[in-house]
Length: 109
Image (cartoon, rainbow, N blue to C red; front, side, top):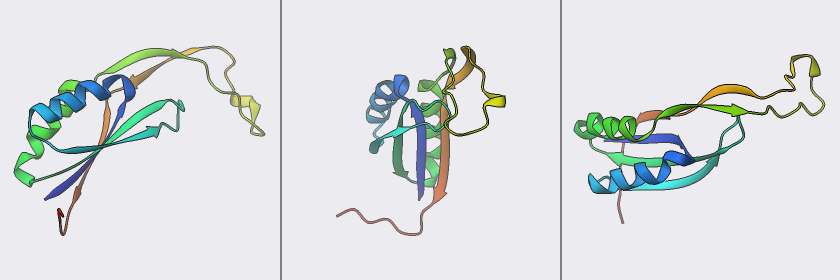
């Protein structure tokens, strides 16, 4: 048994949620905020059997795409302003950050 924690951009959240349901994966969705861009994310928590991990990762990969986006950096508060860039920059956002963790026990009540 494994616990999969997938952090995805909000734009991909509904598509991934539908795909998980369609493929009989039960997931818990949590609202989260990214540390780098301070933008909305969704964290999915999925418990599944080891043999289903490749299928689950394929579903996540197929439904969470990275994209380029222009962002305006937030000015540092009380920090070093030497590294602050005062104009919008293009960064890669989206995709998914996925953690696969071993589970010692699982109980469903």
